Image 1 (cartoon, rainbow, N blue to C red):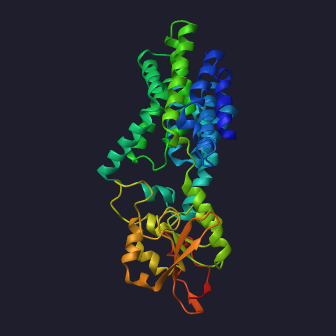
Image 2 (image 1 turned 120 degrees about the vertical axis):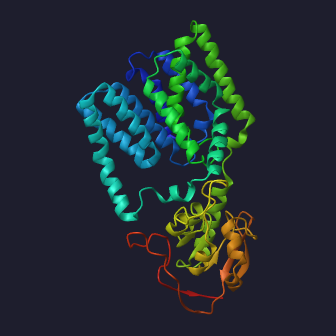
Image 3 (image 1 turned 135 degrees about the horizontal axis):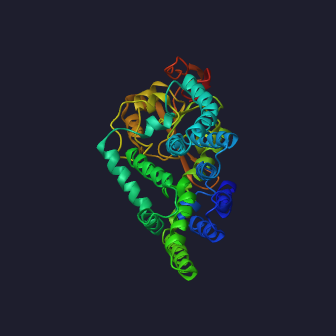
Length: 417
């Protein structure tokens, strides 16, 4: 919530960064961005979106405002922080660098120094530690199929409808040569291409576009004030945009509906933490809430936190991003003490990896047990049948640099039937 409010504060004071911006334009930007469901729905999500939105907004405004040596180093540091939170925003750095080179080549060197001074050591540390150029989730979600492009265009459509009036103002600003800096149009176009190319995202409310909404709101406000005839027309158009944004949110309450997967996963994780030995190896598709609250060693069956599964060469791009990679044989090879199907422990297999496990003969070594959670919900867990003996659990495979990457075995554990 704090970062979301910070974005609106930056927009409200945009005149401090852009001398040509008037207070009325800043106020319009705040109202437009602050009522857009694509942005507001993430304010209390607990995810990285508000932080990235704040960093993007701050970086862009600082880039426009300052040109001194120390200031450009600070802009580079902000761009580096943004890229460290979400790697795709290296594209923002590239566009800002190109714009800076067109205006001030010497200043561009200081900008690069600020960016590289922070990001280069971080990137080298990550590369040496994990052995891959990109985060594990990238390999897990992004393929190279034509189906992925189709999914990306579908995702683009989901973004364009709630942002329809805002995008219309951007087109007017582009065609009419408004005061909007040209590099902002270039970056927005590049970001669109990137999102379509990677196939969009599985999260609701156009998460991949949400960090841009404050800046897009400012661009729309500038365009509106440039071409509206008189204060009355400005007030009318802002009112229409607000009504559209609020009506869309009202007609689509699911975008503000708190996801149940996280809540259910929290309850399941706490239950497992309180009722299973702390060295029980758990195989689950919910590597977030269940893994966090259970405090158990976990095999992430989607591969988001498992190097082996993430780097399997599978044809992906037609299903939900992040839900396509799997390897049931590998999971059973690890001999987990407990297996959960679905997002939070249901009775029947749901995902591809679930079905692979269920078809494997070794799954007959597991017994289904039903637990009643404090909420009254049923939790189904499949436990490995072993006598009370010391069982050595197979360690995860070593990573590219010879280091264990996956969350896994903590040694030998006693298991009961």
